[in-house]
Length: 499
Image 1 (cartoon, one colour):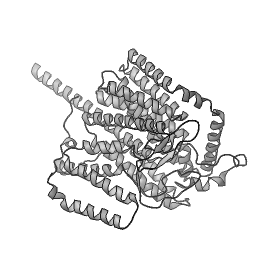
Image 2: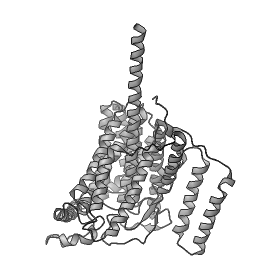
Image 3: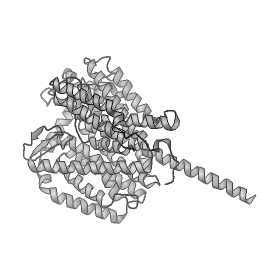
Image 4: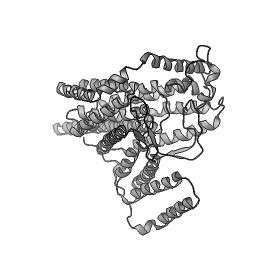
């Protein structure tokens, strides 16, 4: 695709003399030394070190792609700097219960600074794309969250969530504004596939040794008939399954879409590895989500005539291979009492519906569901399993009202719409990336109906996807506008020649 150069593509030239950064390095060394002498926890030493490493990359490398690589690959590390003492609820939490700084936000903030500096150098003014197609649903989510503080019995949790939401929005903006060429889009797509392979391999290791381990060295031994782990994303297999499904759909799209800059054999291998890892989570809702997402990919690919019959045959063969490897575990999992599990979740949903019906406008307050839902139990629900409702939509509705739930549904619907439109792009990278994002968003939308576990990497990945889908659409619309201008110019030249 031929595209007009943009100021965001200019290379960032940074000084490389170590002496220029001596004061900064000295300050970091002194800060870490004080933390060590103060006997503080390891996390207070780990994060300055990570921040210093990210800053070094920002200062010494001439391109944004290195920081983007750190950002994308750090999504798989469930590492958060806990700035306040977290709360705890035995029946689960709907939001982070303290002020946190996820690891991914360190390269995101560095990218934000680099982006602002680079654009100021190039244009003498900041030209930021704020994501207009998502503006209204995001504004509705923020507004309903703020209004939910009125009846809330835990207003501090609402403040915590607003701070967390601001970080998610910053990640969205950074992704949207840093990916401004087809080459950037292809680079991010490759990183996502690498992330999928990385987490799949980690899961295989955990499955082999029977232990889930985290980036910070924590270990959880698997118990039960089926081994279920969380990679480095979580200690919960369902959260892990929800995390890897969108990257799996990106790899699957890259593998299936013929002649569209697809990753070829690498994407196919990544898809197989990711499929095996997903099945080994034994998370039935994630299995169903992956099936629906794959159907969406195939439908749009066939409609666009970029997925051929031969490709579908290869897909069937790959699925058969994956199923053959994991069949014993699948049979064991399918022998579970599905009716009992379903009824359990239906009871949780009924509890949430009671709360939402009683508080339809403002909800009970963001983050407070676990504190108050018992007040709304009917006699037939009192002896059921009492836990946070396994449905993000109903949980959002109970805590922030029907408009808050509507804002979330609206945001996901607009995202799917944007990905659908981008999937029809004539630009190869835009098309294949949007097809993969479409599948990922379908899976996320499905998964949110069946679970509401708080998993920061899943939230971060979703908002990165939102930024990526708008970045792809922006490239597509820019290419169409340029093509229209070229056709208009050619027409004028033709008329001039005839006269």
